[in-house]
Image (cartoon, rainbow, N blue to C red; front, side):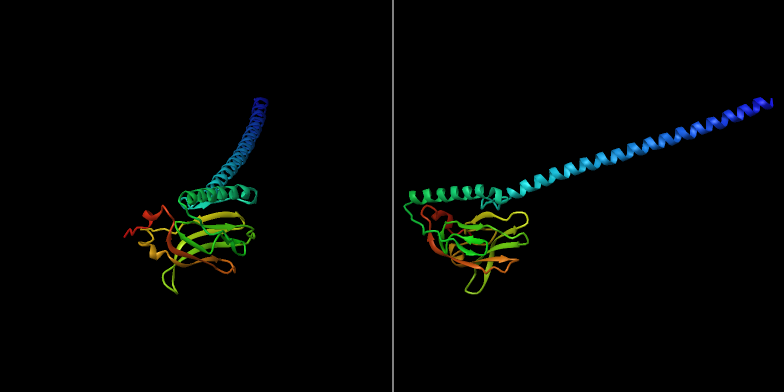
Length: 225
């Protein structure tokens, strides 16, 4: 009986050791599975974040204020942006020819990396803004200000820029009547406008909007309020 009892105790001890080893093996396997799952999740999240960033970049590249902008994402696409703005200029020239109107020559006046195409416009003409060669750290806003009187101005349009993400792009605005901006008559658009480059030390640019209306656009400048 003593032999049987000792044998049973020895078998029980060995069985317990096997149980512990099995339990330890299971814990190790579960740990490996947990780590693998975490790594896989991290990879998936990273991939999704990358896709989301690509979508945001694409959305940012196409982000225009109504149909007032023509943008280029970076210097690699600046040629495409230049081609688009040239197409728009050609379209305007064709319209002017049909209406027997000859606009002034473009001057492209500059302030640092910022340019506008003329110093004087008539109502119905677009003001083209060309931005090229922004420094990496240059970030701010291009602000178009229409005159209220000889000393005060009101913000008409604001275009953000950031040299770190988009060192070159083109944009245009067209001074026009607007209920949302409470611009009711053409007289509220005429006079000396300012273009400020907030966030930089570049001096402001000025241009004049006259009371003349581009032939064919007269209806767009009838009082609206």
